[in-house]
Length: 120
Image (cartoon, rainbow, N blue to C red):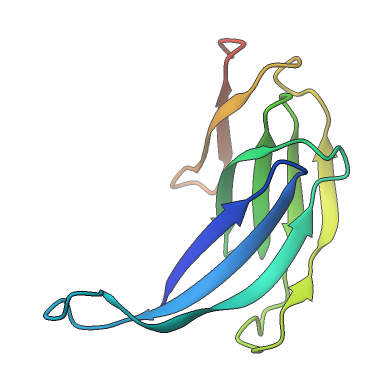
């Protein structure tokens, strides 16, 4: 089973990484270097604080420090070893006023739940 992780930078770039975990018997639980699956860039160039993946709709959903939520679509065959830039599909600018989004979660019904410093 593969382990996926995301990293972000100050200018709103998000990188989607994949790693192959080892058995937990060794000192390092990851076997080999991570592979870069995809890159995403916030059009607002603000630091992304939360990331959630909706596999049913093939979306990577991100939220930033300025209250915006955005979604990027990935291809079904994302096992391709060549990293790609994902296309912005949905943009909800300042959905949480201009305050940081601190929570993104998909519930069991497939709905996205977000929470921010605006208390909503």
